[in-house]
Length: 238
Image 1 (cartoon, rainbow, N blue to C red):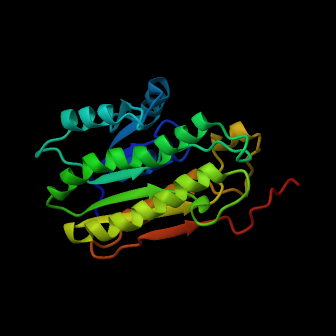
Image 2 (cartoon, rainbow, N blue to C red):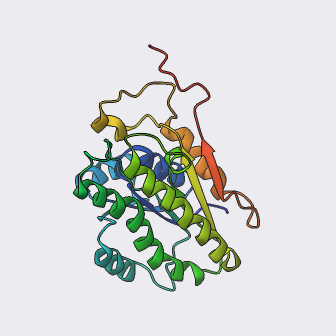
């Protein structure tokens, strides 16, 4: 895919790898709709990235809002080419300590939110004469379970299953589906856990470069799953 003038949607665009994804897409000439709940943070991203970044205040767990926005924004003359389902969060703890509300929050954002937006965008992509691409951002937590992240594991394992079914469902409609499984990335994701980031973690712009590579593959070439890990994950200061 040639990314010049392509129309992309990036969720979780107000922080972390969402900003990096948006930046790299814009550098390639794409127009980016950046979705997130915090409009003030989205406006800060726009100041940095320019007019090709369009802030959209959106909670992806609210289906009616997603549906209304898609209907108002897109038409036969303005169709999305790229969807990056990046919004997600993790709340960690032993299963007996994990609150029901916390469990539901993860499910609604990490899994339901992907379904809600994808459900609305796929029909538009099917009407697009060009090849399109959906990239779902999972985690290595979607490949192996670990103590104290059972809820997060459940959402990312679920996302893997959803993505694999979706890739087989859409491949003959010229729509690629790729799932990325990154390891620990040096972002604010870990702030709530008390874990310090360090230089040996994956870096957001490196992850974004990989996303760009996936998008720019030839039309009939698909990487449907890819795991990204630091070679040496240990904190160099310890």
